[in-house]
Image (cartoon, rainbow, N blue to C red; front, side, top):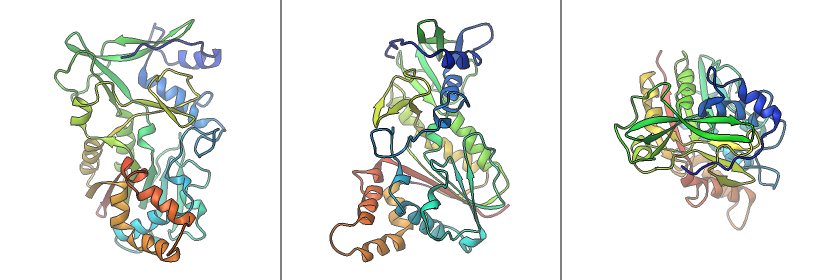
Length: 332
């Protein structure tokens, strides 16, 4: 792992971080550090009143929700094809919306019985018949970092120093049975345990309907064998970085989800028809009606709608970069 070049951290940030140190130490687990710098009410990146998502120089990244009305229209069409029964029987629940109105806010008409937005810090209160949708919710959850050194797995923590923040290796606080028995010296695994907890919170409630999550991730064999530096990343001003301790509270921190573990959580909670698809394949399979309508309304030449559609389904854009995990649960 590359050493962190410690830089001064504001007293406010240091004060908040110090509240979550391990007993009688000045060390936090990486999970506690990420939870604080992303979601703390005082310094949390996601709770600050600033524009994070968009295409201008003041934002850090953009998502499918930034391509106008095309994305929500495709989502509605997919829901219509995947669900049993009329859409007006269901509440559309959006977890982790990036805007105050959610992705459906740009539509003139909404075909669902109601909409419900779950923002950071809100409880997951899901109505009995729901469509639970998220766009890059799970990759934005805190994660643990493990490193294989001297023949065993250790955990990475963050040490608070007067001069700034430093990485530190600590003994495992809670072992994970999923970790490989061994690995090359220095191999790093970023494990999205909080993402699994969030999914269990959603799937463990007693509701029927459709689960659909847009995100990016890998399967566990790939993470265990082909990502020796982990998958944790930062995003700032549309640039990706790998220094997770840089400018705490001012930049985004993400981690790849582990798709096979997400699928297992859904199976354990009686979900059926579990599908993992590339975004392009998902839309081409379940949103054909809306795609055809967009193309027919703009048969020749350039149009904003056609450009947005290509961003979402073209393999060179978001179509291949993102995956979609969907599942149904229609029986109690």
